[in-house]
Picture (cartoon, rainbow, N blue to C red):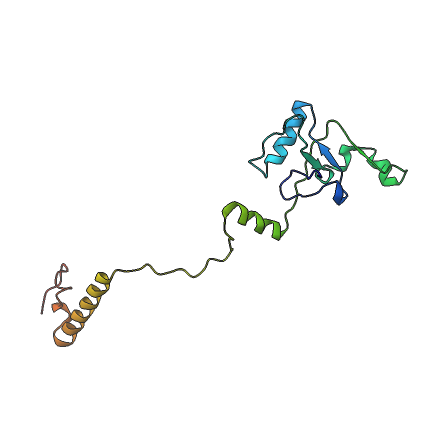
Length: 162
């Protein structure tokens, strides 16, 4: 079983051509590594001393490796070693597919950026019946008598029937 990087949205392993590094034994440096992972994965629990949890080399600056200059100049160093005080600083950038899978996994449904058509609030039949009666009553009074004699508007202050 290959060890995969524990950083959110990073699936690098030794089989993808990346170097993998176990969590250090020094408690101060170890705590910094755990905080780095927890910035994106809040549910990440600190691994035990014997844990196989790893972080890949893609999350470290080049100066965190000893011999990186000689390897870049081509002096025969194929493998660089991580310095004991090195702390990861580079977070993985997720692809849109990874973000969508994360949303589905965490929220249980695919979220879209555009909201769908909003539904009008449902009105009861009694409300609809009352509204029809009110409109028809006012219409009858408006054509038959003056507008102010409408029974609905006659209760308004300052309105007097003509």
